Image 1 (cartoon, helix red, strand yellow):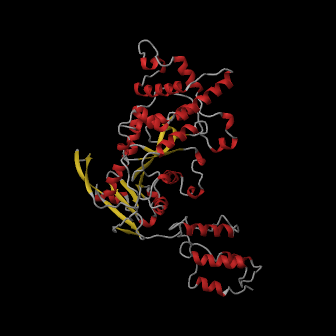
Image 2: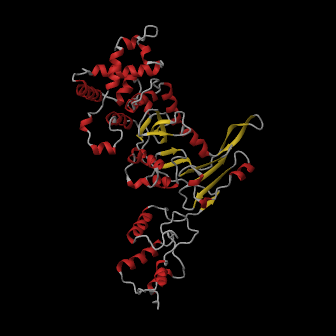
Image 3: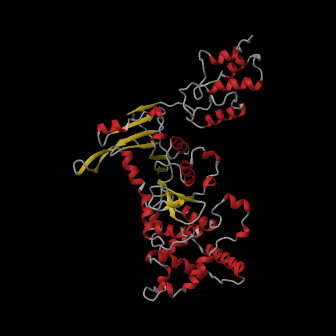
Length: 492
């Protein structure tokens, strides 16, 4: 005969039939505590049906979404979630605001952003007044780095050939200078710079053709034997890590702006490389992926080359996903009060919550699949009936996040912790139906997003002007061009 249920369980359940994660976390913890302390008055029964009833005391209804913490499925059968795992999930959910709570959203509600104070931004252009191209290059690569390249290259050549390459500090500087000049002239073949009809004295008089190719083939920035196997497994860019770190330190010395944009940048490469990525829609879709954060004037203030699962080793942000983790990683050097803009690949509601905890604003386009269903966005079909320029604003009940949907040729959803619809303006758009430009209403968040994401587009445009045309099968040769790409961004 089944024993009566513990009176303390009746007190916990009260008039509820089931307990729902997110709404009844405290009650769930009380039940777990009773089980852990083994002080429950519930008697064990040999009846399998009664055991199953006890297992189902804490259950979920079909209407609870997949993000709830406690789950039971027909496929699991008698395999239950371990008590320690369940307790850890409940603890993690409490540490993450709103992660397990069902939030309500209000349509057309006013949005009042928080006021995060931060240090005033410096004018980076004034700090570099009077700089030459050499000054810009020296900001990223100093003599110590060039000397390291000389030592590593000579050591590697002795190991291979048995004689020294006799590479000097001045010669390696000439080598990098020649590469910069080649990126401006854009000859289709490197040998043309030494050929009589197309000879360039600034290059041919400084270094012979064979010497240039010899340095290009044997250039090293590390001594392979000094790199441990553990580091090689952890860091896939270990062959060029010193030069990447030198460039990164130069970027970190730049003043922090109050408005920055985060995006992914492709370094074109079609050879064989395990870090190579293919990003559809990019002008150069195949190559090495580089996450960058840039100021509106187009200067990169931080970057991180993508190398798979080891790119962001911090477990606390891995749960956010690759895109949001990139924003978190690049945002560590930004001051509180900074406004971060990003596109739909990066933007998620948990990311906005995370940055808000760090007292940083975030605005970006967002995939509709990442917008909570409780927001109830208007369908594209209905927005199309209303017409171009229609928009809606939906604010979460706690007032921390706003979602704006704007319809132009299609619906564009955006999420932010600072910007909303007002003050709206009008923009000039081409009407295929009327064969003329028309004025279309535009929310404030859309206008600011277009303005502030321009820094990334400026970077890509400036680099495309000075991209080295010579192709290489060695990915290390491509990655070592990062200093030249950084110098190409400067426009003063």
